Length: 263
Image (tube, rainbow, N blue to C red):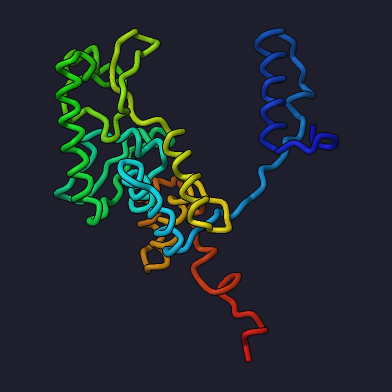
């Protein structure tokens, strides 16, 4: 796969893991030499970071609810699924704070709520609450609850505080329970709008929803924010992960000035 097909490291490692599982847990055959096979190393890539002007150009092509989601990705440093899984109770307007529940690594964290989004987000929630009242009246106003809360509090799935900030327009049937309820907006829907916005903005570089998170971290560091603070806002376990965003903080590599410019 590596020498002949030139596949990515992740593809090779996935195939190796499948073979190990097959022989150890399905066939019950122990192959000690297979566990010693050298795995391909993941390439260390620097993230794509847009300038502030490029971010504004992309956001200008995201409208309505999708535009609000995109603004949260950039303004709060959220991952896409973290934004889509936000509950009403996770948004604290008084403290200008957003609580991310059960994020990557099953960790909770608090991040900032941009003051410029407070008004639009409150107006959005007012419209969502009206739709929620209609959904409850028509019998599909419930929402999926984490862990075993649905058994402990049978009526909690109808509470306004547990509703998604960005619910889908139409209800769907949960295949596990057969209950008709309101899920959150699908990630693919946001990604398609993002692709279209990037194309219309004529950036000349690739960008995705996750690029906004990279921009959030880099632009905070550019503004003088402490790297430990940025680490906490992003939810990184190790500050070394956050250090990757220092690559664009100064002019040129490592902040050096090109000899061509030193005249």
